[in-house]
Amino acid sequence: DATQGTPEDCHPCPCPVGATCALVPKTREVVCTNCPAGTTGKRCELCDDGFFGDPLGQSGPVRTCRVCKCSDNIDPNAVGNCNRETGECLKCIYNTDGFFCDRCREGFYGNALSTDPTHKCKACSCSVFGTVAGASGCSQVTGQCQCLPNVAQRDCSVCEPGFFNIQSSKGCERCNCNPIGSTD
Amino acid sequence: PRPDVHPLPPGTHLLFAQSGRIEHVPLEGYDMKKENAKTVLHLPEKVIIGVAYDCVEKMVYWSEITSPSISRASIQGGEPVAVIRSDLSSPEGIAIDHLGRTMFWTDSMKDHIEVASLDGSHVFMVNPALVTPRAIVTDPANGILYWSDWNREAPKIETSYMDGSNRRVLVKDDLGLPNGLTLDSQSSLLCWADAGTHQVECMNPAQGDRRKVIEGVQYPFGVTSFGRNLYYTDWRRDAVIAVDRYAARESAEFQPQKQTKLYGITTAYAQCPSGQNYCAVN
Image (cartoon, rainbow over all chains, first blue to last red; front, side, top):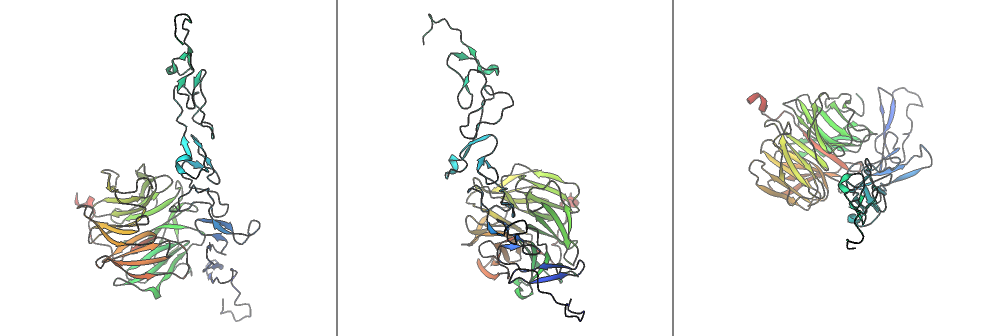
């Protein structure tokens, strides 16, 4: 406040070099108005959208603002891709999930870090008949679903050789064929 | 007055979001009065995406994604007030029906469109099953909504009545990333800015005639219309660019001092466009 007539009327802006500031009269709060590139916030303490870091080191060492690090599993046309402070990825695509979009989301399997989007994460698609009731997921890496007794295949869709009746949803039953009168 | 809330003088203005601020540029005729550009609202902790204007109460509405909310403030100098603070994930485009006194918005994480009274009460979901919805505009006189979905697999521009009925796809061919959408109430032209095809195009939704306005745009995000001009924000140029629809060329550029991404843009009309509520007619 330059109108008080004391040497302390004007203070330097509490902002990084190059920024300007203004005083909010009602709250007497000082707000930086022209933060350096990539930063924002009352004190230029935050990163712009699409970046993360802690440019003033308010909660630890100084981390300059960097582009969201999400394993190439975010879309540059999206907004709010990561938490601007922690960098936690918020908009994973290609059915990925996790802090860095580095694993498949529930119900999907594969390699989230594959460079080819078609090889990233595929749906488990577990058979409704051959899978343990209530198990919706599958192994993150192999995609193996949780099969009922005597049920085979990654997706638990067929009976093991010598077994039948997958539709029972209780696992497959032994065929009980006479070994003399049956082929194979 | 607070230095972060500047009342706007009378006249027509462009309002646009840049990180944690809503900036304005007055229009004189169709020209941007760049030297009179100013910050209307400074909310340093927010990331503001969508901006809309209610010409009746002269309020600006915006969506914000850091603590997902929708807020409003009088452009004649008022405190920002959050009207929706819960059940939002990533609100983006926002549009006002100044006749029906409602607002509509897209949510790119909940993947649908919602509607509420302007004070934030009576929230309803109107259009489900979207993929990456972004821009939304209203046609208050006819009770119609238009929105864009930039889904990389199947980008489209869709329309429905304001209650969500009569939903249909308006445009699906030769689209890339239709980030911006605007309806000029006078010419009834729906125009979109596409960051994938790098074009701005228009069509009359009733007739379906589609035409290119300008090619080679860099990375448009929001677009708004006023008379013969379209104004779009651009992520590469960090600027607002005016395009003359009739001459089919760029006519002016405004680059704010701060160089960072610009998001939604809207026209704050001096007066509401004339038109009767479709409900009043029926």
